[in-house]
Length: 308
Image 1 (cartoon, rainbow, N blue to C red):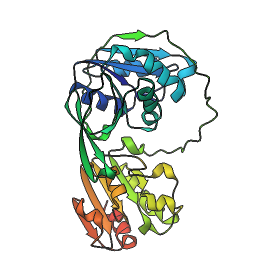
Image 2: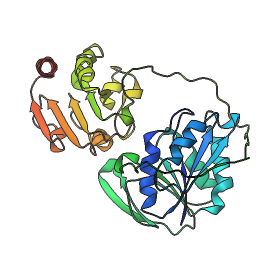
Image 3: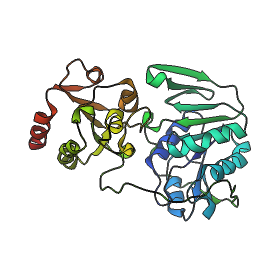
């Protein structure tokens, strides 16, 4: 089984999802290549080569791949696809953008959001916003899959895989990068944070999210939100955790004023330890919480910060 993994990166650093993809791929086969497509991304390639289990790293370093436009990346992956039985990418905005194009161009069905590998052709994935788990068997010669990285541990480091430069550099000419508006924060990124504290509709307004700042600072945590809080305009949508937001699985997840709609639970229920703070003792969030505290968050949060 030859497996191609698309590396998740920002041209400077390799994202943690890639090592988790390698761990997932190792349950399928041992011949694992990692594709690094970007511009001035030598440091990313070196980091990928350091992941145990990687056979070699393929580097497509060209200006047309700098912003990882889906039309350009999908063309590159399709060009490489014939040598592989499986193609894997993380179920992030990047992977969800270009992988369906790869599947369509190769005329195969994509298997999305896998959370477990049973065999080389059988995989487990959530459906109905995580209400049910489906076991899917694929008879396609080429398996095109996105992986929910939070469901897998990271592969270890300590490898020295060979790095090979690719000559392919094709600009499809169908799209172009205009600009990026990024939220600048000293806090960890949501999908990479080991501790997350999230607020929901119970926060009542955006100003009250400031109550989470002191606790987040003391815990080195990222701050998230439920869809209800985002839809109400309390916080921007890049903070959203859930089925239609970011899928996270930190060591500690603290849910404050979040009732626990299934869409939110689908995005955080794989967290190692879940703490829920809510005044409604019947809130669904308590069904998945390891620790629950029933009470008024406006009384509890200052006490928690003081205790920390």
